[in-house]
Amino acid sequence: MKKLITVLLGAAFLAGAGVGAEAKTTLRLGHIRDTNHPTHAAALKFKEQVEAESKGAFEVKVYPNSQLGDPKAMFVQMQTGDLEMVYGGINTFAWIKGGEAYEITAIPFLFRDYEHMKKSLESDFFKPIQEKAEKETGIKIVAISGDTTPRGLSTRDREVRKASDFQGLKIRTAASPTVLKAMKALGALPQQVPFSELYMALKTGVVDAQENGAMVVNSASLFEVQKYYVKTDYIRDIETFYMSMDAWKGLKDGNKAIITKAAQTAGEYETKLLEEQMAGVYANLKQKMTVIENPDLASIRQALKGAFDEFEGQKWPKGLVAKIEAVK
Image (cartoon, rainbow, N blue to C red; front, side, top):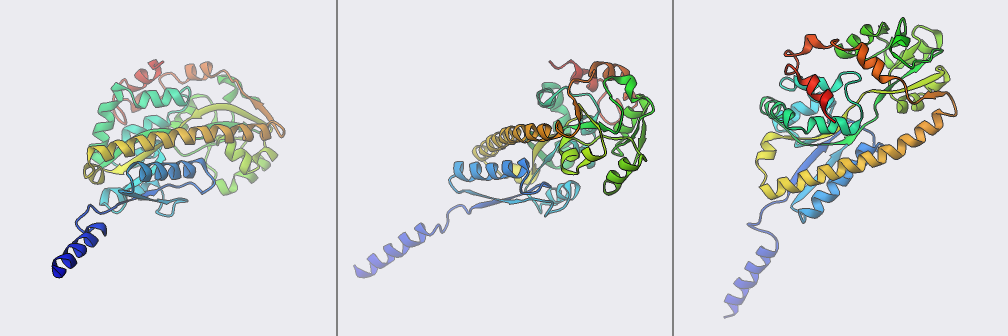
């Protein structure tokens, strides 16, 4: 009898220790922002909700500040099975083979605001594009959720309020084909200058303008060498939760629902934090430069009609731009 009791107690101990139970799943989540950025706060919100709602079945480890590499490097790690998740912009999905159609998300002046962009990317007409990209890249788009700082325009001595005001403007831009195409179509003179040299280039007149967002103008003190900030919000992005397709397929449906819900919640949290942060940024800039809040974007969009036709049916499906423009 004593031996039987000992055996039973031993079995109870092993069961309590979790022997034979499903092991905790670790999800490593990488992103490129620093720990003070809303993206990191959103990633921590995702971690908190997934761990709570799964009742400890998942452990989420967050790696900020490009600890795991730049976006392209992290995409490769998801493809090789060395990383489960990434939280980063939808623009970057175009950087890898199979995701080229997402270069449409970087077309200047295409998206009116965050809601327009999110609604377009989650529309029925975009679903086949997403499914094709997921299949070809081996990466799952879990949730497109989380506003980011849109790119604007700052100038040294010129008010830019309408399309014709771009004529002859020496502007430092990103090397993106769509950005260069837009600026040339507007009559501007795009230049490539390393960011580390941008302040001095603006100060000495090598270039007259640049097209980073208000947060960069504020943090890099570009207001010291620029008189105007024009709120064009002309290129937008949305933070997106990506997951290795193999990792995604290995999840039970209930756990997929938990992760998707947490990703949407985290994105909404980032959007709220960014709105609050940007209010402070604009308040500061208005004390140091003239902020033009309502430029004539309609005139600019009209001037760019047909500017990206050569990419139709090449980088993205033919007619996709028109479908996005029609989204209300």
